[in-house]
Image (cartoon, rainbow, N blue to C red):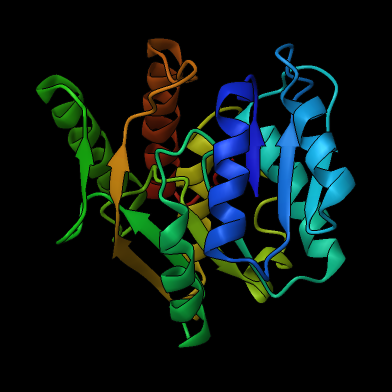
Length: 236
């Protein structure tokens, strides 16, 4: 599953690579009515490939809302595993098979991680590398989550997790959604979360949706949730 907004430049390569990497998988694109015609292009693919599905939403409601709706739709359809992945090819679809293998071996959640041995990033400035590492360590500390890459959107969830309702009542608007979901999953003692190394490659086409406003909002929410955790309140 991949939430998209204005990814027309990447969508053909993305779908080609995913279909090649896991030809047996169904691919769901959750598009927020992209002005550049991303959804229209996915619809063209879906017309000739029954494994490609378009969930078209009206207006840009953001990554978290698109993720919640997509996960709920897929859970209701009865799939055994859901992999979430960015459409901009910063995540390598060839890693999906390894993530599915780890789910089959007993993991409940597998995170494609930049910050475990063997992982890393390409084409980032030193400042961005330091900011990302610091942000992830801060998030892990505040939320009490023993995960090195809390903000990675490249994940595999097994069916009991996606059907548990853990995603549905989160109210975070942006990428902080990824962090609070991890907190809730880790709070369930029976959930096994694994991190597997990936190389994150900065997009070469299109524009990143990440900006200072989103990063500031995420840190503010993580700080608030961290305080709430310490006083025993449920996180949003």
